[in-house]
Image (cartoon, rainbow, N blue to C red; front, top):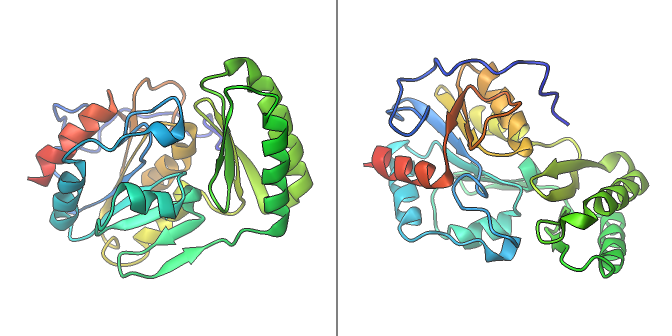
Length: 261
């Protein structure tokens, strides 16, 4: 888990003030890393109910072209799901918090699903039948329990996920988010994904900008900060490593449409 107290949040001084909060007025010379749920897309009660707004794909395509391909979507979703959301988008994609990566040159890297992980998913699905309203999301190489519709089961979900993680051992970590607890591969996070992209063209040599909304994005904020870039959190700031803030996913989408043109 990211230690949010290790590096206190600093004021947003890395970019000119823009009418969309602390997002930069220009993307020239930058590499852009965007979370998906809660950042590009509005949160839904169930993960399958998330909608991609009209024209967002066109705006992202224009933005990627403006950045000469130095755009990456970095998500807890699976790579397959990201490609369904954003078909034919020419940019980098990181799924499962960096455990799956699709590079702009068309190559891929992914952690394979183990038999032990398969058994854990099946065990969680059986237990979840006693938690009406809790949604189990099978991501392939990871899995999550969403309790937004049944917050009364939050403690029970946490206990079971911690138990399953102990059984799986050091191959996984527990990741908490907004009304969700996930078991995902160890050794990868959104920060390692950002650093991996930044190590090669077309990202190398640019200044990173990381935009996210949740605990899972703190590793990405840390990596961007360490490279001298900008980190921007969507929504209420609270304890965060982000050095800037923007109000909502709607503002992020409006900013993308603006700077892409």
